[in-house]
Image (cartoon, rainbow, N blue to C red; front, top):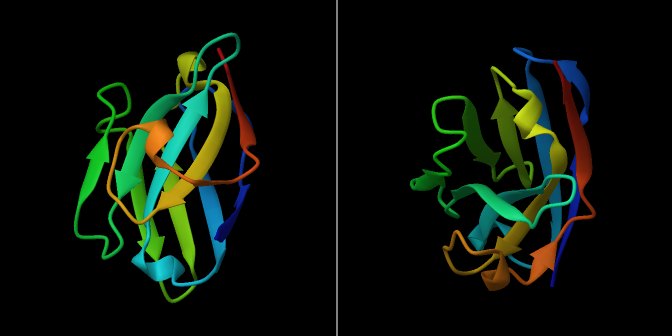
Length: 122
């Protein structure tokens, strides 16, 4: 089992930037894929970005492509989501998740963090 803790959320004006962190602990975390998902108010959880264990492969949702960058530092057991050019529609609770497999589907992930709130004001 992998334990995940997100941090870095907050309130930012439209056009601003935030960097979310996902600190992982537990067995063989560096062999796990890490995904970022978000849940906007009143909506279902949606895929944002995913990065493979080696950091050699990443995939983004169309809505964030070109604005968000996912990365990881396996020496620090931490994954990141750099969010630039933020829009009010990016407002959501952001979750990181980990799983041995590579997937853009939330249902595929067995380990989840508690979430961090990101609010973008217009």
